[in-house]
Image (cartoon, rainbow, N blue to C red):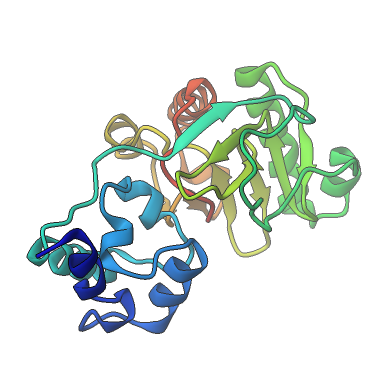
Length: 231
């Protein structure tokens, strides 16, 4: 079969059995319409697209394998940056929460007494470990440092390196799982918590070990290769 005939014959991602519309839309928006389009793309690049889950991706990879295609085990391209630095490439910037000039202290003071006290405690802990001043990201997230990322598809954006949000339901901790294998060992000793795609959720600080939390923050702070997205 000629290259042209092979390209024309390749399956559309939307036709892969057992896959859903959110996955189809996420991949189409990123420029992937057929299985051939995905060939050689880093697996984390695809998995970090909003709307792509592990089960759906597994089915796509099985269909790719049947046609002789495969994703790679590499990661999306990430780089540390200071805010205001010229972005890498000309791809579309993700629409996501951005750093603001709002006062962190004023935000913490608006919280309930319980969350206000824990917010101040987290400011102390994160500040000790990072040595950086905190910034508000969106209306309720407090972040330290910044990572600029760019996917192989051209999508790019900025995110906090580490941070937290003292939400009413649970405290969200960001950036603690950049090195999944190593962080999992630490997480096992953290205490009582739940995890999301890239977040650690705790009900109250008394439920976790502060020394382990500091170790997780340190690891996340020193990492230049975050392979997970936001919560």
